[in-house]
Length: 447
Image (cartoon, rainbow, N blue to C red):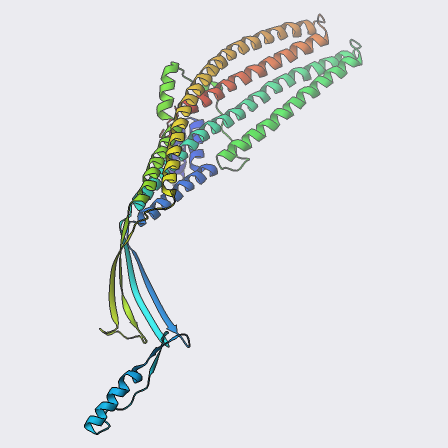
């Protein structure tokens, strides 16, 4: 089973290059991207909440009260009925109609209960519909926001990986240079012991070795920090090993700039996200306009009432209501809110135009930056080759005693710096392409 798993991993790695494999890992594991995804999931939950407002609200309510004191209602039943009863008794000459007392009815019952199930159903309430549509558009904007960050993350992973490869190449160059200066130091020590040179020549050669060693230390520090940042983007242990690619493994294709301008306007997620925001603003205008219209709600209560809990036909009740609300005037607050929403829509229209111009500008700048960066590679390559040839000649003369130590060190420094510069230009070119790829929306996430 383990063999099969390992084989599947190797096969998957073979079907995609190392960097694409790391990008896929980053898109699956990056913590910031996961936070963006959670924000989108939260917006879906808010959308469900808005959808739930279309359905009835059903609640169970129970109340049991005990009261003492309070206001009373005086009912003079005795004063009203006793004269009548007295007259009747005199007529029939019998006391069949007794005298009664005036009554005091307490306003609050000593004990009382009400237990009911209530149902409230909106029938006409436009703000519920428009609120749902607004949440729907905002949720879609959040989804596109995830894609926006994905594209930025891909470019960031590529740049971090290229920085790591650049640091490795710099270390190799410095290590080759270290071999040269160490060989020079050994040669000068031998010459000094044979009284061919003075001690200061040895000291200068030692200083040159220390200088190159310091450069290697700095390059190694850059390698460790760039590796740690790259692993951080992939949400991996910072000390994880990183597979390497050579400069020649990267494929860069550049076409006509007009094609990229059109492609960027079609594929840049920021424009799609802004469109959803505009749609939400249009629904907001309708939402604020709906405040001019009446709303209608149906309500039904079923339960039991009384001084005791009894479940008889005399105790239960049903109450159905239709409630209409129409705000006829509210100090012009409604018209002010509509105006605010319209201004928000105008702002988003202007932002849309500005964003398109910014994208076109970014495409132009990154395109010609990429062209210039490609030319810099050729220039730095020629410079490095010339510096290597010059060093070979100076080194040959130096070994024959026809060139000074100063000339040797100058030639060696020139060769090392030109090689470092060529290395920088190569990876700056690839980083420029990663930025160009992000700006023009070339990277396909389904690959």
